[in-house]
Length: 632
Image (cartoon, rainbow, N blue to C red; front, top):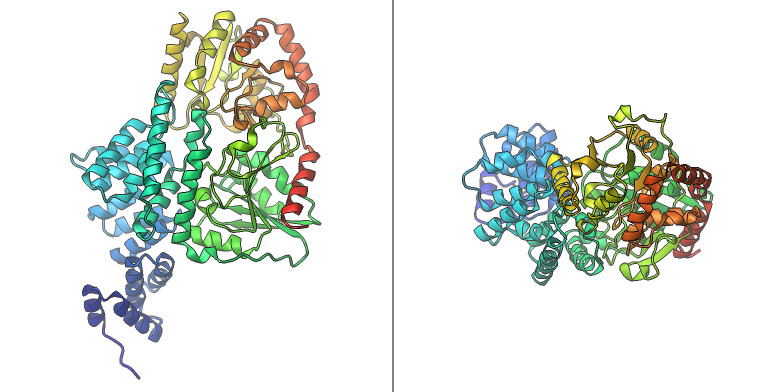
């Protein structure tokens, strides 16, 4: 029997750069003695050096199970989990830091993990800690830039990332994140082309220099995509297809380079003869996306279709349990991203539909892989994916403009009506003005959208309405990211009202964030629902209609700006749709000044609203689409 190499000899081999020989030796030792924790750990650490993350993680977990908890082991575990986009990496870094509290590199990695989470509220505490350092390394500037970007401070974020690239041009993450930095809220119309040009130029430079034979570059691109998907781009109000296609090409290439085993040919399996349809989302909880699209999951004919639901991120709550109990298969895939992909592939789906592509990073990465024979995205975030791996964009026939197909890299399939089998929710009880601290003598115009949906070019709409109907009070909801974003928006309003000789504080009222039932009650209190123009209300408009609140709108250029107009058209209430912004101001003034007209319109709305609920036509069309792409 061949003698096993000694640990000292194997350490010496690794120190001399003979990594394969050292790895083979540690592997021999662990196979000879499966209880040798040091062999499991050392083999795992060598695999970390070669970026074999999954194999490394398996060995490191085994070493920990055998009782090891050394700082190098815990650090390597955290590195692997982060590299595999496993949300537990944040906790792993906290454990590593607890084992070595004085190690500055572990502290920085922990801060980076929080910034990479994509959660602005988790990142906020990082910023003072980083800014308190008199001199930050390139890595420190990168972490600061990420945290500031997530916190909505695009200018300072860009400064930090530029500083990182100047201090160390080899910092791949800073270079890949930098072009993606976009403001949460634009101060002026004029700054939008500047940020758009920075993004376009930055993506072009990244694509030109994308050397996928250098794993660090591919890793950095994917980390940047995970932390900063281009969610905010569409709020600029332009055609994003060219930019999304460029980003899509890079993401597909990088994911194929990182996970080549997931590029194997796919097979379909139908053991019970039913077509297998998967719905993947990071919003399978009490969220707008779930409210819009669970009708698809629940409404398909289960004699012909097996419905799979994949929770690939986000929270779990009672709505999650409802979904779990009403589909054929539910999989919680919020762990490592390669395992999530492998699970979906193993289900051998005919069709996989991503409900909210474009909103969060995990979806952006998974959608860049071919996990099903046919892959589609829905309009949870109604922007093209730009991905060659996505075949179809499932949209609404009532919402698409005549040139809609040109806005997507995917084949456009527009389902009848709103495209969704929507179930409305009414407030538990009507609200009162006193409940929300609102005056009795004003006409309340609810502006329910997230503040970043309001394009600065449309800011003059509010003072123009106020000038013609001084009894109006516009209601907004504070930004969840923080008071600083809300104040930026109010400063914009103040400038717009001042241009008309008015004081915004007299006409604009900001309410705190409300829970869902409070929000629905507010819909029963308000008199009008004023739609946002470049990005129309979707679920917010449906909730307004369900609670008798009159929406008024003007359709935009893209599908995302035409949701409310489609609803009103389907209900036959086209007189509440204005052809342009000027006409919308006139319509709003007319309704604000006339209580009788508002009463009439409210009664018409209540009578027509059932037209929108539980529309079976879209389900029949969806089933037809699924049958066609599955070859039936």
